[in-house]
Image (cartoon, rainbow, N blue to C red):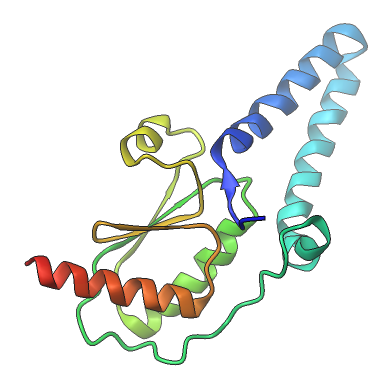
Length: 163
């Protein structure tokens, strides 16, 4: 399975839990609805926190990092934008790796949470998260440090060749 979160499932998570709680509140009790909401939020937080340990058992394989051998850019890296959603377990993994690489490679990093920003999703043509944009290039899904360095190097060289 590709290591990414499809945006329709992200939105379904955000819509499904409140709808379930509303139905439960109207049909049973509002106390049960609040309980479902609280348990749902706690389970989602635990899922994201424990995801690196359980990913291989739920079909995603390992999310262990492959360190980059060479992290110095010979060219100036373009601005890097990380598109995330707050229920995606891969987004914090990629964010951590980019922050570590930023210290070594000196690039500007911005993060955009697209959970409730459909205009950005449509404008950029995003279908999943995490997505890294550098120059005019995009990399979707979980990426190791080695893959990120290769992507950033290619993006930097492509942006220099167009200028």
